[in-house]
Length: 271
Image (tube, rainbow, N blue to C red):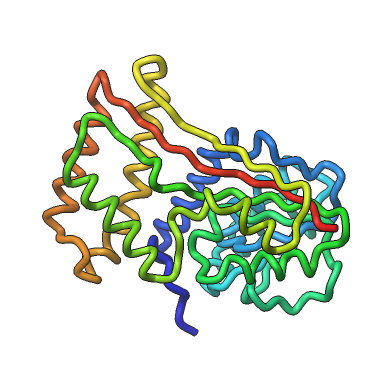
């Protein structure tokens, strides 16, 4: 079965990057996520099990049902999670369309979606399905991108051109790189209640030089992870990618560099 269009691809390097990304962002992503009272949650877009690993460590009473629309990601998740002792018998992964789940209504008491809706052609359908399979009173936590907020200084023209193309390619592939700002409206339209949203920001400058360098290195990997697809699709040239690499290296080592990026986290309740 062909893989769904995913801008970062499905290589082993990308699968490892996703796990590193989850660990890197864990502190800020999970600051307000609380599943301490839940027992059996649904993870939509469980991918390589990167968030599954964190959830099971943070909430030792949980069991997790993960679903994903990529066979290769599921295989990677199963292999990775089988090596984690504390996760034994606490998770399951299934290949499934999140917009048409086979679960019965009221099957779970919570749900997590992390960096998922940006890749989904019909987020409202997914959110409606999640609501259908949650019990009344269940909480859902959603973390999503807002790529229009990305800023690096010094100004870098190749990076700017690449980033605009990156977002346009994701839009043309059925995703939405700006979906984070729309979560409140989407949750309302899907029938959720007690909706809250928070904007979370990395803003790093000379006050935190070590952290700034770490974040820029992380974003360099994220940006380059899409370069192969963008070059193959003739959206960018290899020369542009190489120039972007040079700019990123300069920024990472600039003593006055500035990094800024915001994303949105929403939580809501099913009634």
